[in-house]
Image 1 (cartoon, rainbow, N blue to C red):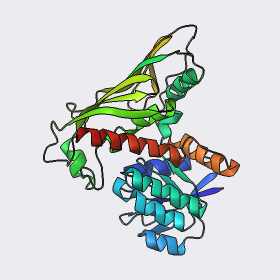
Image 2 (tube, one colour; image 1 turned 90 degrees about the vertical axis):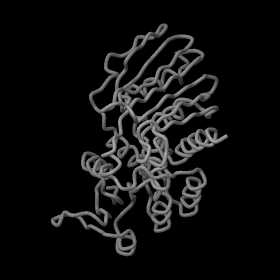
Image 3 (cartoon, rainbow, N blue to C red; image 1 turned 30 degrees about the horizontal axis):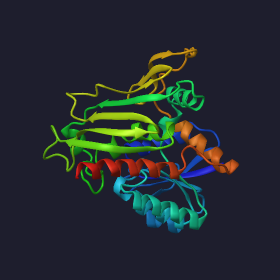
Length: 320
């Protein structure tokens, strides 16, 4: 039985708690959150990380579900205390901090995982298989679009969202999964051009709400248009691949829908789209198995470094 503790019990912390409860062979043994209010909890509740690290004798792995800007500090504290960590995306807000986390993990002999659960979406896995089998031939172009809404209330009710120090911007907090999928599908990705705009979050956030990126993914040309300024609610998001032997599009906020497929000599299975949008239980099971089998994982923190480096490239290019 792999024993988890949960550091941070906000929205995403609750998602991780449910994922643990839905997964066999794992157990949640404590929660660390200064604002936790359940007086009848069946498990220990710690108000501070310090108290947890002093008293805990059970935990194998700590899930870091705190504000983005605290991930480095919290992860390193837990690693040095002898715990594995699963860090909610992003692993850190710059590549220096991300690499330091992995260096500490190597020194302590512990594992770092990153919450990149959309890698387990059936349409995402299907495209990965097509690419590995060269079923699409030469990849010409990859187009990503993300048209979302984050209103004033979203930022006012979440005190750390909207700041550069704790949030980091929409590429980190809202759209990092889409960039991570590029890293999952392709061996080399790098941003070549970027532009950022702040349309309707001026005075609300310290960073832009929208932008457009050009990138290379192996030999393919890529572009990404993203915004959190869409009127009233999320509109759509998706990824299109234009290739020598076909065209394929996957979509929805969680990339769980196959929108279009026209492939040479390939008949797409009918069950690619799924109503399931929460892939966190699959991620928890993957971590359980990776640790018990002592093997590499698609969620290893090394993969998360590429994500942070890509976003750093995008922001640095916009300042040139």
